Length: 457
Length: 165
Image 1 (spheres, rainbow over the protein chains, first blue to last red):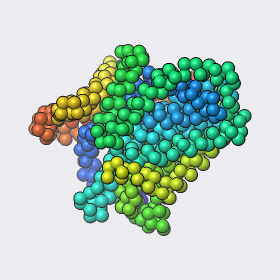
Image 2 (cartoon, one colour; image 1 turned 90 degrees about the horizontal axis):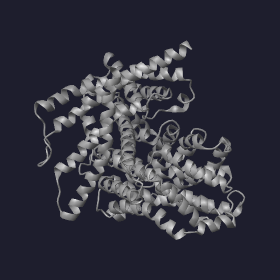
Image 3 (cartoon, rainbow over the protein chains, first blue to last red; image 1 turned 90 degrees about the vertical axis):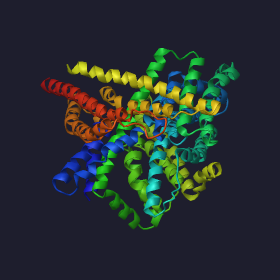
């Protein structure tokens, strides 16, 4: 019970706005102190801290995080995104709704490498919102498309959140099997999760595109076709722009994903290659000087420190949470729910959806998944399927008014002519698509599990 | 005095920034060596791990100075500066210091033990500096406590300044 109280206290203090990582650890520590004074928990429960911290420091999988961040930051600094969007818009511009389609595709391609909701939505908003409005898109459709496209990166590999989720799930999976008395444990890796997320992610992209095309044909005034002049301007040098704008990032992402899927490289190795590839591409375009390298390094260090401080704070939290037997409490509750695994899953999904209003993907992955993951996996759920479901669920949460993260960030960079109700109205159809996708995946888990089975056997 | 000490955090951050790029290059070189020349080096791989550990720990304090650690800013972003200063003041005193004090206190013996044994890698061909790697924990906690002092100083000034005006 105290464990639950602690969770609620942390949520309350979080709302005050002090950095999340320090709040998680700090509040938990006060609860630990109280428990030690009251004689409820023993101080020995906390002495695992240094070896846990050391475990984080030498975790092989998590080394992929700074490397993927660096890859994303370099691509951003080299203005690859602008060129990509321009080339795509030119290529698809002649089709009705083509601009919207290209925004979705750019979001899917670029977001893949950063995966931090705010960053992607802001970049996409600054980049494509003015263009879309200039070409006569309705503000609602434009902002909905951008918010949705900006969150795509969560689920499309190689996203950082999938790396983090994969690492947390792999230890949860081991724990679940040991609890069931299975000692020759199966493993689940980041690579599994990448491969498993691929089909659902691409289906999602396809559904977004389909929606935009249908909308453009049925309501042309919302997504008008560009005028003849614009189309002629677009057609000029199209082939060259496509080659230089589209090919480099596409090649890079295919190379990174391909090498993981074919088993040539671990995600960490592929991330190192991807980061160097991004630097090479930037250098070839003449966009990489010492200043850019130094800025990219600093931004990478900042994001890395941010992510890992949350992990450190969350591990203090979960240490104290477990000292109060919170893990057993959650286990009892989840297994007592009607409907077995389905009931537990629905409950967890709802909880996470709500938490997504105040916490970012990273925090939820580090705080909630280690607690509920082992229980759900013990109930017999597939770890890859679970990971993809959680990712899709959170992505939907980030889009949902009035609290969705993506909407806040988009509001921050949107011009005043785009009203907040416009943004809310614009995302509704995309939320519908998300829910549909969740339902599909719930009914046919094979959408996530088939490809990893084929690739890894 | 405090400001000069903060410079240490900034310098360590710059070092971490450089290491992110070096990590990528070294990681790429390791992959090349393995597939191109069937050559693998445990030491090189451990070097990447060391660099990674340094980045995630030693960059944290300067990131705090740059306000780079995520906040739940639903309310925070709309509050007046004086209230935000109060949040930062109390947060540093009641959350940051106890947490980092705990990390420092709990890792002291752990790290000391590694020093006494001059702990080296358990892998053949690994690096002999595990005790230095573990020392990063102490460095991290100390850096954060120091940065907390600066945050307290600034937040106090902002809070008082706004309150008086």
